Image (cartoon, rainbow, N blue to C red; front, side, top):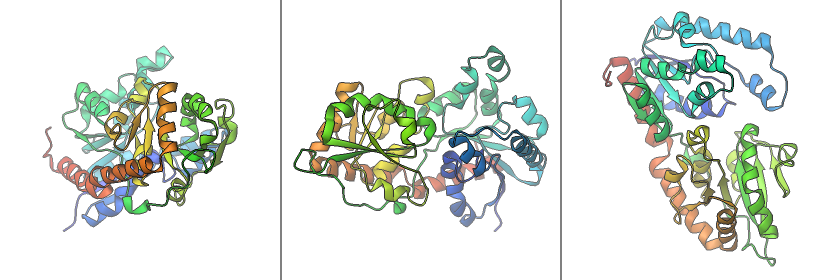
Length: 368
């Protein structure tokens, strides 16, 4: 039986984490379930390579990308449903998206960060006036909104979305082999424990929050950073770091070189909207975690079971020090984290939930 035709409007191609994890990762399961999915990313991988490399934006390519997106929206009537990542036309108001064709068929909206804060909290008053309510309008007009965590789900309900469903950002545990821990006990007679962080250059600034704790631990730990350069870290960290580039094909192997995974965050509106994906990755690899008690981190980290929640330099020093000094504690917490991922944060768990949401949106069986 032929299933619904879905126009998938992602912001990026495969290099964009949100597009890769919340959309592209589900394509095999959706197609096996009978969905006919047409991919239409807004910005390609070359755009992100230039962005992460610090190069200037290519305005002509961006204009061409917007033209292609408008053409895709105009052709949306040939599909049963639009599956939308965040917004259709960034930095343009909702009315422009509607004129281009958004809403001609039902759409499912997906958000994995507090993107509404980018406009509503912008430093420029004209941006706030023109775009501050855009995401709320998008949410109200969506047939279903898929939220990456409870904070985002609560916002969407408050914005008036008729049907909000929680869909965390997850992994395929089969991609994460349980490799031996590389570090020793953390004292001078053994190799230090490796504290690891994985992310993008734009979020590497958060590592500055743990610089003091790492410095206090001295030779008991060493830092390994996946996805950011030494040049970006040297102004914010008082300790050296081994930096390796992020690559999709090697990220799980790189996590095998880590003993402890970390996710420091400030407690602010944007960070409360994060989905904790790096914590899920660490746990999938069987590694214990230390994280700031911000947003969904407080749900993912079971304090004292699969890791520690730490606020302030003393707490970070204590948590990292305990894990660095105790290989058995690392192993036990890592195993607990892996079990949590397999039970709650695996593609095999969420793929049926996503398929059900897309079918409900096309059939009108949501709470609209």
